Structures are given as structure tokens and as C-alpha cells.
Length: 77
Image (cartoon, rainbow, N blue to C red; front, side, top):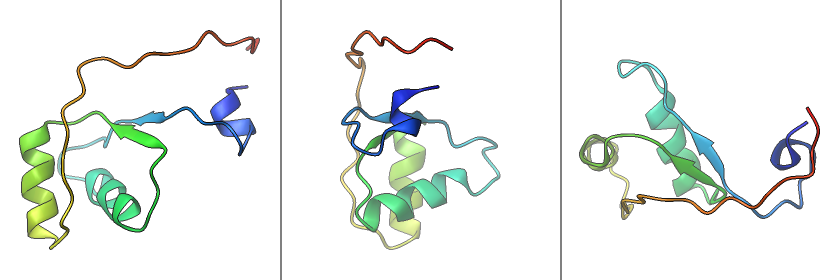
């Protein structure tokens, strides 16, 4: 099992995709971030996320990340 899911003390980010562009995944992700959840990375068009955050009245700085460093895991699936 993935350590990030099975170990609440894990410090690495979880990578999220918002799913259907017409769905609510991106909105839920932005609202979670605004509520203090910080252990995830959202894979989405940054301009779309900026526009959605503005539409929702959320003052969130959107940063483009072009690479994540992943530590090797000893988990066996």
C-alpha cells in the first residue's frame, strides 16, 4: 500500500488530478487548500485553476511545478 495513504505522518505530497473538466474535482481541491490542506499537488492547467480560484473568491497563489522529486519507496504492492 502507498505510504502516503497508509501513514498519516508521511511528509510527501499526494498528486491529484481533478478529473472531468466539467466536474467539481478542481473546486474541491482549491477549497481544501484554502482550508489548510497542503500535502497535495494538483495536476491541472494553471490558468484554469487561477480563473476558478478567482471565481470562487479564493485568494490563492498558483505556482507552476515542472518536476517533483520522488523518494524511492520500500513499499511492495
